[in-house]
Image (cartoon, rainbow, N blue to C red; front, side, top):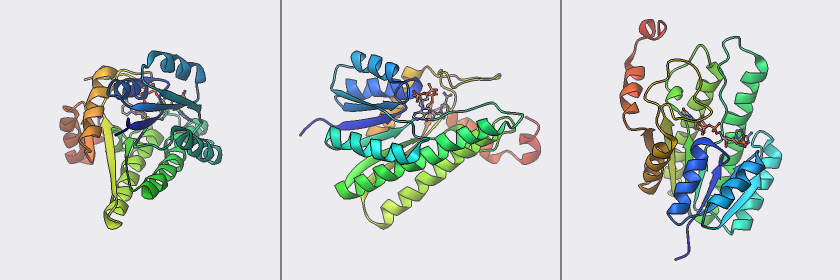
Length: 240
Ligand SMILES: NC(=O)c1ccc[n+]([C@@H]2O[C@H](COP(=O)([O-])OP(=O)(O)OC[C@H]3O[C@@H](n4cnc5c(N)ncnc54)[C@H](OP(=O)(O)O)[C@@H]3O)[C@@H](O)[C@H]2O)c1
């Protein structure tokens, strides 16, 4: 059997970058995608297994769809895709440009990529889509309404794809990853706690991928916070 192939969207930094390394350590051929090409080339030099890089801005959806199809062709197929690209702003003043950018990247960009991949896996008859949601998906947030809503969208969309897979009796795995705080450029703001090193997060995500989990909290202890957020009445939540 040949080597497995994975594509990481958002491989230039943070969780995606670490995950690309873990995948390569586990003998995957990896396709590295993001906008900052110099960081992608740097990562390519660090990774021992064969890698491909492609500059894709997922917010430019039409172009992104074509470029991703091109990358899949170049790699001669793909078994797993990790959709880690995302932005987040602390935006209490509701600056429209920031809300829009969040929606363009985390929502429109996500769907554009997910659709290409889903159709590819349908044709291929197998595959795995791994989406990067967040604990933020569970409740709305006054300081980052677009970010939290975009992550709720991601989790909900993945559930939709999972139902589609089940109805069509396809053997495609759909994995929803919900990290708490991970030590990357994205983890901003006050009151951060239980911040996980990105290496640890990447390993836990890799294990969830390997066991084709439907869902995983990263790190595992965040299941407690998730549970609390779900049961918390509004009158308590609104005072946090
Ligand atoms: N860190 C946390 O605490 C945390 C918690 C929960 C969920 N998450 C989620 O984890 C994912 C990864 O975030 P991170 O923490 O690793 O932050 P990060 O270091 O900022 O990584 C974000 C990645 O997304 C890519 N990206 C952003 N906009 C893009 C675009 N338009 N087109 C293509 N790629 C784009 C970036 O690459 P370029 O800039 O080079 O394009 C970068 O590789 C995000 O979806 C985030 O919402 C993070």
